[in-house]
Length: 101
Image (cartoon, rainbow, N blue to C red; front, side, top):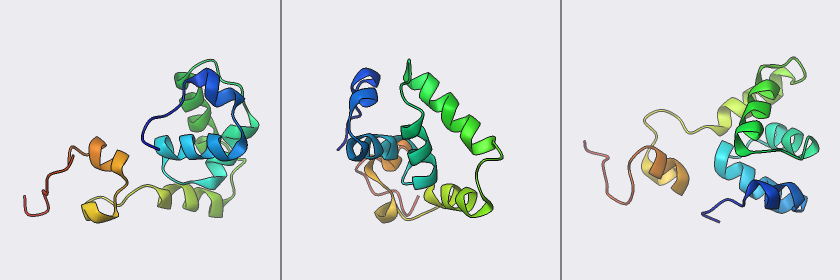
């Protein structure tokens, strides 16, 4: 999946599809994605992102869940072979090889 659903479609989708879409935005961080699913509906993607921030900075996450969310993000300087397509695009790597830059 390379394109996310509209917020209206995301709000009405099943758990699996919701998680797949949220993982595009936030990498694969189950503690975050599961909580976002539970708190639907969202009025916009901005509202979804704000809720994600609230979850991450709240005291409801255990230390292990916080670590899992942090570890879901690609490491700085990571080989592009280990980055998701979305992360490659975000980092400006597109399709070209910039490993030796």
